[in-house]
Image (cartoon, rainbow over all chains, first blue to last red):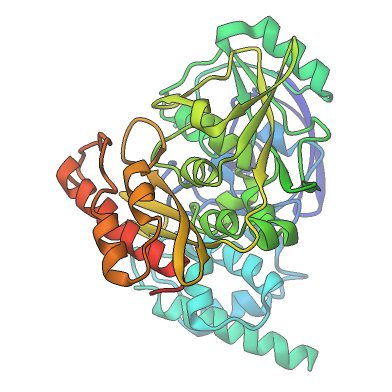
Length: 158
Length: 284
């Protein structure tokens, strides 16, 4: 067993884990943070995307021990006092989900894009989400939501 | 899918890493960014007894200049390579190729050296480093050795790296003044290339003075299209380039799988070489 200390969604955890434990299983099975789903399990679909030390990662392709000393943000750590972020609101308002399985990963990947490029065009959104699959929506509303969130954030800062 | 059990070491210096690798022998596996290794472990295609995580070994990350050479640390992530100003200025081909690797989340974790040491002939970077005439610097118990990319790749997923050695950095000659382009042919955004062609072209008086062409997924290792390179020298128009590109698959043994037959890949290599060279030469 290996000892890890990791901060997840603002809470510090100390744990003993098997080295082979994947970050996504640590989040779900040990911490009960089931907002991050396991999708394809082959690093293709992006459903399990979280943020590790400020950058998006596929948590099925990171060992929990690799996150030792790090800071993880999951989709469950985004809202403040029950208040959704503009990105989360935009996914709701633009109907960017049907079954919702890909949504946590989509939001975490889109968040990564907007941090680097606050004013993307539709092509840039599609490229940024190339590692995230949605089998319901055809992506149209997801792209629309990310663009709407970008526009909303601009209004806030303007 | 849960990986098989393994012991885990996380050395904090290069010396310690080399010691741990020497002790682990054949049953040890290096973990860099994990974007190739973890999928292999999850699918239980690899069963290392010891995983040596070099993620906390200092000095393996970053890009620096050494005269006419660019030195890229093995643990530099794809994300960092794409954005690095030195890479963009002196080795634009590497930035262009790396931008096509997988997707943003994978590029945050995956490393330049990890992709080369993994040596998948369908991966983008090995052929690009080969086209750039790069050299790989390997540390081992006896010190360091420098291996030209032409000698580094031995077979499918196999390099000259010994179990007690670690790839520490990659040296590529600055390609200032060379045109470059990468043609990656794949059906799905983040999938491997069915065939990829990385081209570097130096022009002189409107003619191609020298062309270097790296081939992705045209054999058990990344390859150079040497016959096409010879034929491209001196070409001064698009038709001449198209003729020269017809020898792009010469001497290759492309694989066949559900994405295409060997013949199909040979055809792709010719077409993609023509496109990549024309764009790199500014003749497209």
